[in-house]
Amino acid sequence: MFLQQIINGLTIGSIYALVTIGFSMVWSILKLANFAHGSFYMLGPYLTLMIITLLGVSPVTFILVALVIAFLTGSLGASMDRVLLRPIREKKGSTISIILCTIGVQTVINNGIIAIFGSQSRSFPDPFELPSITIGNAVVSWMQIIIFVLAVSLMLILSKIVYGTKLGTAMRAVSQNGRAASLMGINVNQVIMITFFLGTCVASIAGCMVGLYYQVIDPTMATITSSKSMAAAILGGIGVLPGAVLGGLIIGVLETLVAAYVSSGYRDAIAFAVLIIILVVRPTGIMGKKSINKV
Image 1: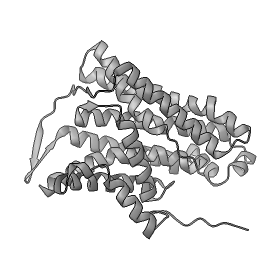
Image 2 (image 1 turned 135 degrees about the vertical axis):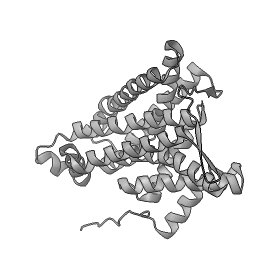
Image 3 (image 1 turned 45 degrees about the vertical axis):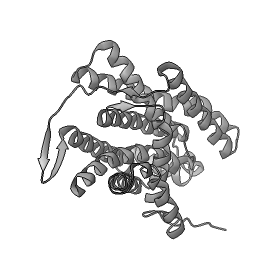
Image 4 (image 1 turned 30 degrees about the horizontal axis):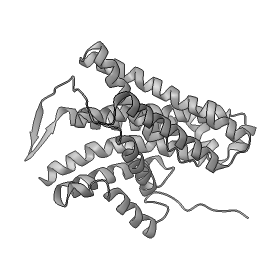
């Protein structure tokens, strides 16, 4: 029973970690809480469901549609920065103005989903229908294994981009000092836009993973997962990619254990209970570092 819950927790935790990385990447560059991030995570599976309903459900069709929708969602995230957030930054608008703008985008997407698809949960098809295997006294589906491996692979790819490419070097330079990065010839606005693209793209893929895992999607998934990704980012150390991964995995495992051994009603509350504790004990998060203010 315990092994089963750990496996379930690692599966959903890897998806949370993937969403948290996108959120954390935007924070590290802009010091901005992108409240629309969870809405893009929800938009991916809903658009995928709409297209595969028209084209038919098959493994190849699903994979191709999910990838196209992820690219489209990433493009929408980049467009949000280009059309809405960049003008505010260029006019020296306050951070709260930018945050309110992301909340506005969140509201538009969430209400648009409800208007088109309704407020009820929708069944999400599993075109793969893979069997399960037994490990000890735990039953593990191949879908869980694929989700975990895919999530870890995407996290490694993002880490390679951030820490092993010229683009990643530019991202880290902008996160440290955007003005100095600009003086060194880095196109700061382009780096920010690419960061939004990557973050929302992987969020869309994570949303499809959740749809395959639970075989159901609903309009509340945006708000719930967005809140959990913020909690996971702060828990691991906001702005630190390995911390985002660690925070997501911890939240996933803890909520699964609480749902199994305490009550499923506390599943969503555990993320914030842990967040409160970590803020009291270690405000910078598990892997975060104290910022130094020079005077």
